[in-house]
Image 1: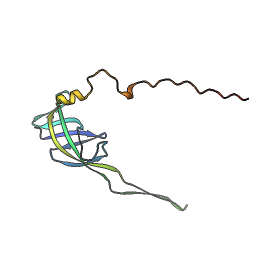
Image 2 (image 1 turned 180 degrees about the vertical axis):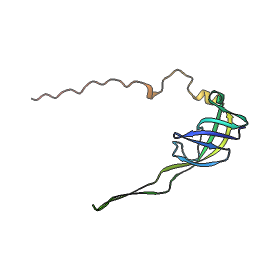
Image 3 (image 1 turned 60 degrees about the vertical axis):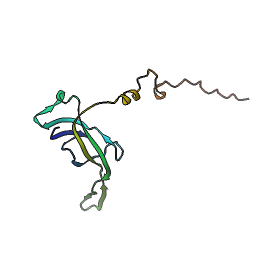
Image 4 (image 1 turned 60 degrees about the horizontal axis):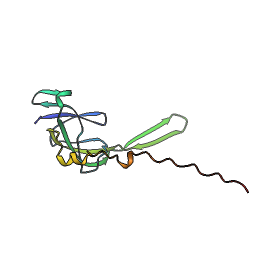
Amino acid sequence: MSTYAVISIGNKQYRVREGQRLLVDRVPHAQGKTFHPDLVMLGGDGDPKLGSDLKGQQVTAKVAEHVLGEKIVIGKHRRRTGYKRRNGFRASLSRIEVQSIGATRTRSRAAKKESGTTGAKPAAARKPTARKPARKKTEE
């Protein structure tokens, strides 16, 4: 087990430890679900591991909740003209909890079967059938 890892979420990198909770940009996963963020580096057990040394390693994180950040008020004005604008902004954030670091990636047999080992194409992948154009009405 590594002591820490550097993960990448939303084009930002975070140094995390097991059990740590942090606020990141909104992730596309539902509240309470687990996901595996991109792993950049593992460290803490001697030499850090980078790039091809990370084969089979992963970080598991759980989405604790989706929240809004603090309100930021943006004010603009031009002197002596009466021009004033005021606008607010709240960032969409997710609070995540790091559950495990350095676990190897394994897929169960059931997951391999469900992944679609059959040769049939799903309905979304098929081409739609061509339709004939509508017949023009003639005046009588």
